[in-house]
Image (cartoon, rainbow, N blue to C red; front, side, top):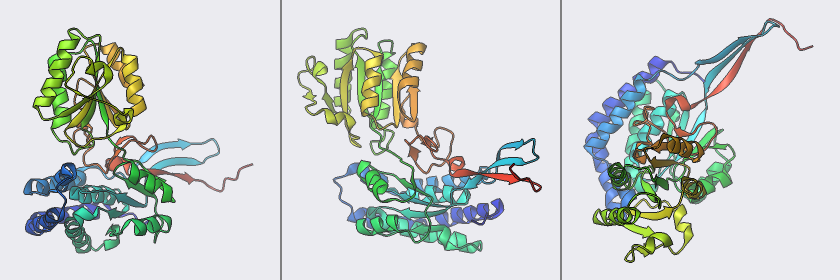
Length: 399
């Protein structure tokens, strides 16, 4: 794959920033068409679909931030000179061609493309049909930015395919695919894994947990819970499950206070049998599979555990591997929790809402990877490259 100079790539990004700013009306008009066709029953998806002037400002800011970052391509990872005279250089290299499949969020059309392009990859953008008009306008602006700087539109391409056509594309892509990133629920992920013929990097479901330890600061716990649960229900970093230690001081009073506070803030709270015995009015969890669900709604589960070990076990059995928090003043308990919980991001005394590229210092993100290869957590610019060994010799042969 031809390596584009950093200067040219940054000029494309500058052009795109200007085009977004000068075409606000076209973008908002296209988005209005998508919103008018959308079924309002799915509030979380509707929230992700909306584009405003503020969101356009955010798109421009994302491009500006990526433009300012160091080009991640052809960076030396390690160098070694062997006794036989061979010089071994391990350097970063583009993946090649990436396919991302996502729903609802037009801003992904900007963030995914800017990251892939700056890392010298081609990208296919397969957005959901609910954002067709918005995505089409944004991709057209990308094409204009590329052509203004003498580059082919093929670097950033939109796919408009139904389920059957997507299946055929995955099985027989028109060109070699090097990486597929499905951003969505388990049905989408399983569908892609079933039909793909290249590497699939999973941006898994949220279903994030928070454990209130017996040594927790109660005021901070309540503050963090309300932020993580209610600030943005459509985000994959929102809180869905709360576990509370039965050993905490004034356990019954705090449990009831928490339930009442969630109710006052509009959160439907399902409870396990132990909590139900103390809060008679609460809806009891009838099917344990609910512990594995990502709600994307003003809904959560509240359960009681007797120990940190029980909390860790329940989280590892049920979470999506995204984010988990422990509320505690005990540093040893916090470290045990953070070491043993199998999630991409683990927190002490902080909201899961921080699992985001921008908030974690990565910048714009392609996705939050819940895989362990090749990267886990926010997929930023530096994570959209692989590596290659450059071996320099002078006629050496292996004896």
